[in-house]
Image (cartoon, rainbow over all chains, first blue to last red; front, side, top):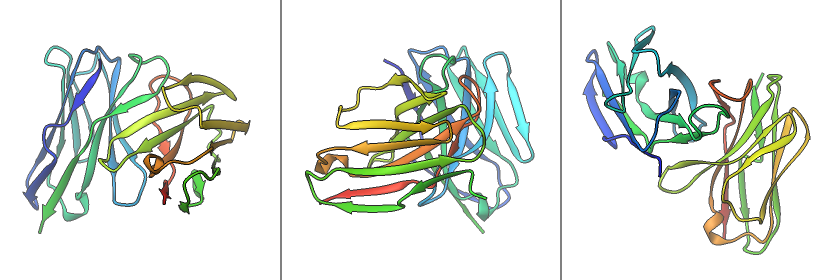
Length: 114
Length: 113
């Protein structure tokens, strides 16, 4: 069955450093991958979508890579700030990509210390 | 303006009761979803609706039933509530099926006692 793993439950870094979060998946060939941010008591908020034919995507201080051979995505936040502290979720479409239903990883809780 | 809104935000009820959670989106999206986030924080798809038709029904108990009176609303009805139903339920919508970002509501924390 499809499986998504975000290998760190928690990540603590110093302000100004680059945070790197990892998402691995197995038994799967998704057409795209998404990253979301979730704050306590709130719903997930979409950050980035990267397609299988894209190696890298950027948005402001965020960068996502997608390696379909390794079955891995890396999510980077450069020049991290305390306001970046949240749980970050990796998500893949359940059916490969035609319907939009998502499987989410458990998330990585990022804490950025001043 | 809230894009995806759910009511109520909190719901405490006794075992065996029937309850509903309402969801509305004002984004003009064609597809709406219900997700469940359990105590271990896993977020799992329950249902999705596209143009008022159920397009997939994951293996959830038939005590759960989605109802969509129109494209902007997708309500969740739960019959005979059980302790294990306690979780946070999120409604979401997307512009269509496939590679579209999902917009989530703020969640409904359901506690069954």
